[in-house]
Image 1 (cartoon, helix red, strand yellow):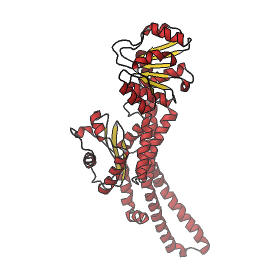
Image 2 (spheres, one colour):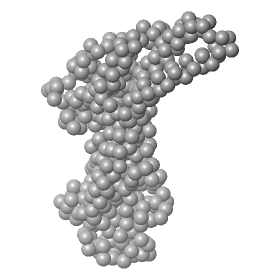
Image 3 (tube, helix red, strand yellow):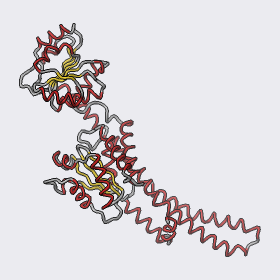
Image 4 (cartoon, one colour):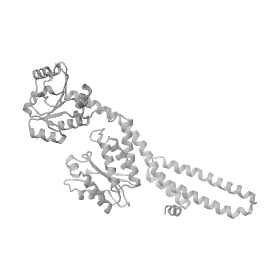
Length: 427
């Protein structure tokens, strides 16, 4: 399959370059239109925070990786980028790479669940821009199938892969109905932001943020539409929350054991979950000895994350088997597109010869013998073509190198002189 992929991603480039080459959806649409005008019609672009990748079917063999790279760099001017920041793929290599992405095992964190949706979005945009033809459509449909199979047939996406996700999962184990619980987030950094994201995904609505710098807390609160309380007041209302997740950079503990004893008294000893993901810790670790206080620090959460990452790694052989199965199915389909016209032309040519010879000789037979003669000649032709037909169809079902298959097909075309027949059928 004559598919080309040019990729710049977290394997090849630092975040500064990936950010600079990131394409918004409107930029992708503009890029596709310009690319179609100058280089080739079939193109699909996948652009996320970790990768910008261009997949295309060239109109001719003259289109080079360098032309595609240059086209991207004309659109997004970037300093200090070199050829080593790009990876180039062709044919089966390009498809295999896309399948690994859709499966979630080429992501920065193995098992990234967002990437399949991003592949689908890339496909949708290309379809809306009419830049998806028969081949690219089949390739992306197969990639989406790979992602769906990985989701349903493996455990890759089970369990959290980050501290913030692990914290939310642990809270969900302590409280059966997380949605109704009141959550306090202490801190307004990236960890807090990811934690709120994970809480929102669990439909937790009652979330409050506090932070030493109020403006940062307000900014995060506006982003997620949650409440804010001033930092100097949060200890006065700690007893109102069922879950406290703390992720500040305070050099000293913020909350002592006696303070939590007081909180539990106000809560009438109702369960309290404290997830301390700060370093140094924000809570006195001794709070874990208080009845009905479920305290976990970052080490406990990291154990959960490591276990999940190890389990995800163990799923990779099963995922690679799925990818191989889908590669074979895709290339069998593609090969059949090449082989079917040859089988058809062979049969037409043999039938033409049989028919001519039958017409030439049939009058040497009695009229009542002619029907049997025609049946006999047709059976001979069918038997002669049986093995070549089986051989060609079997070739379509193997993941052979495209060069080998093309060579064999060209030999058959020349051997039986059917090039013109195939061309006429195509027209």
